[in-house]
Image 1 (cartoon, helix red, strand yellow):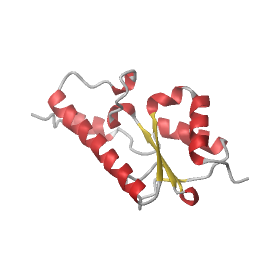
Image 2 (cartoon, helix red, strand yellow):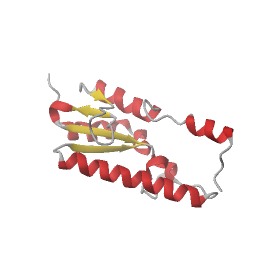
Image 3 (cartoon, helix red, strand yellow):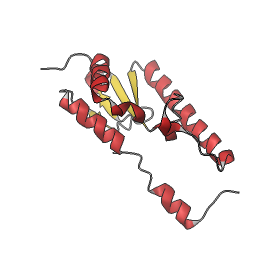
Length: 139
């Protein structure tokens, strides 16, 4: 039976969907590299976190837990041991929705990069990965 207590509802409502700390780290890094972008473009599948319209590229910044990062070395993606009957389907739906949105974007001609929360630890590696994905800046 699901926990519908007011406290649980309040707790879940506190989970941010936009402008999260990992997203802000990536946005600062990308801006510092000289790229300009739009955020949370509603007309696109999945409402990408960063949109580079002229390049036809998008970046999603995924929290490892909420989006089901499959890397077994990721400490952020560990599944809860309690209430697994609730969490497993919920997190599986999130991952399935992400895959569908990425495929829809690719079919529409967009290139997609997913940055996982655990990949933010090494900003130099991440900067190279993003630069390789986006190409040269428009100076």
